[in-house]
Amino acid sequence: MSEPAITLYRLQACPFCERVVTKLDEYDLDYQSRFVEPMHSDRNVVKRISGKRSVPAIVDENTGLTMSESGNIVEYLEKTYGGEA
Image 1 (cartoon, rainbow, N blue to C red):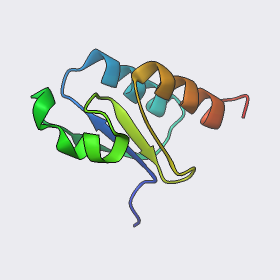
Image 2 (cartoon, rainbow, N blue to C red):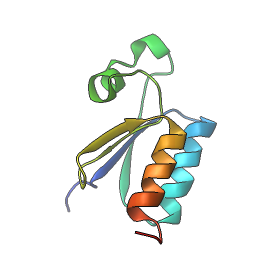
Image 3 (cartoon, rainbow, N blue to C red):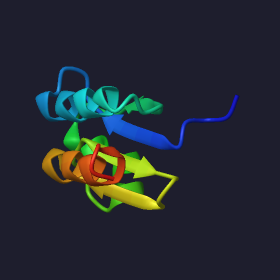
């Protein structure tokens, strides 16, 4: 089985991350979760992929998009995978 196209970089018990998880589940999207370092300054993996150390961050191989900030991600998921698509 291949890797899911969507990777979500997230923190345990992060309300912004959960908001994205809820949206991914709502659209029944296959994704993998990568839990990142709790210390902001240690999140080099996230910085490498998105240019920022903030989570949530998402990488969507389907569209080649990398994005951070939960509001933007939720909006992107709605536009790309929501009913209106």
